[in-house]
Length: 90
Image 1: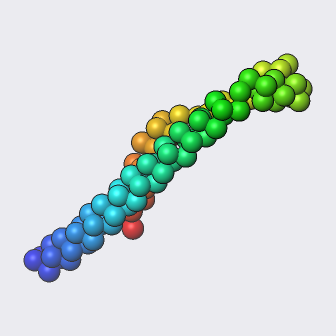
Image 2: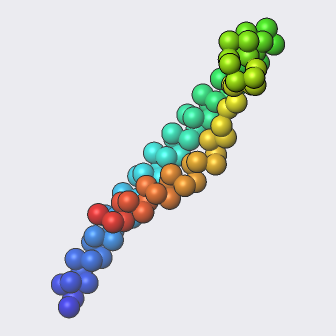
């Protein structure tokens, strides 16, 4: 029984270490995504309204605005939970 507990304890330690590594990696990727999103928003704002008019004229969907930027924070929570649950299943 002690041998089984020791083996499970070691597996748990490995899983926790892997989760921490993945959590740090996800945090770095989130920061990179936020920087890229900020740069994209900045570039789009510098492009000016003439660029938006050209895009809406080229679209056949009623001239609606097609350059909406998704909020990456909404998807990060679920993806980090999925990553940690996948590593627990190993």
